Length: 377
Image 1 (spheres, rainbow, N blue to C red):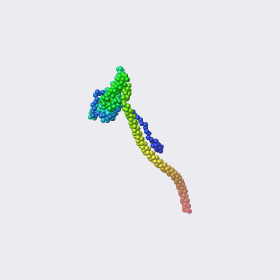
Image 2: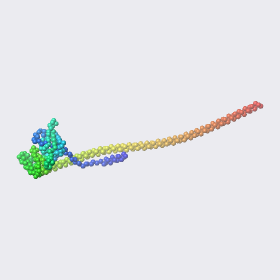
Image 3: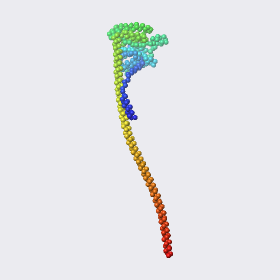
Image 4: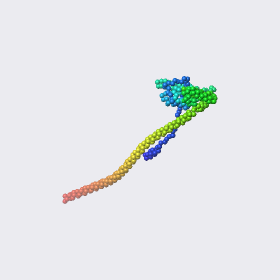
């Protein structure tokens, strides 16, 4: 049994080899988003109003967008509160801006989603920006409202990325306004081709963004117009940036994969080493038990030989005992025979004494009779 266990341990040690698992991608759940109510006047710029160098939300739920914002601004505090009957998948944000303050971003979100409420709670621990999400007002289709009106979406576009609104135009307010009016005119003409209720378009001058609210067809046309108005160089830069982003992400994934592989190899080597040490200890235990078994086997052989010697000696003693018993029995028989001879001798001696005494008596009698005769003579 010990030898089979030892063989199994050696086979297990030889069979150990690292296996690299395939990398698996897991989808991250996106938390529901929150919303803010529209305010008519923008908040004043404060000293504690940090500037965000670069922010991009690509159709993100508000809750997840606030999580991204909190990571970028760890010293700022944001909280999303949602009514019980508020939808969990509303609102979504599509924003790409550079160099905006937190107050401008909050105002932009509030303007893009009317009905959302924004509150600030001051205290010793700092200011908490609270975003309250209320149920959006949905038109009643049964009351005669058009169906397309119920499927409206809100999107935010950056106007500074289109023709005529370059860095040079930013320094010239007249040229900037003229370029923006031309862009809005083209957008309006294109959107008129869809028919139905016109969409809502608003300009947020502080951030240079366009806020759109309309149905899916109108959104698609606006996307095409914005793509057409975007300079070719910007388009190429955008494509290059996207390729660079994909390449960066690919490199990061490769680094992460290499890190995971290295970590797995390290853990596998540690596990192999631990298993090898356990197997070595087990082999030592098996060898010790084999040695003990051999020692016990030798002791058993010696005990067996000694037992056989004892049994043989016992047989000899038994044979000698039987011989002595026969000798004693023979001596007893001789003693009994000698006793019988003594009894016979005493009997015969007694008979001879009796006969002698009788003869003596007869002689005495004869002597007496002879004496009488002599006297008579």
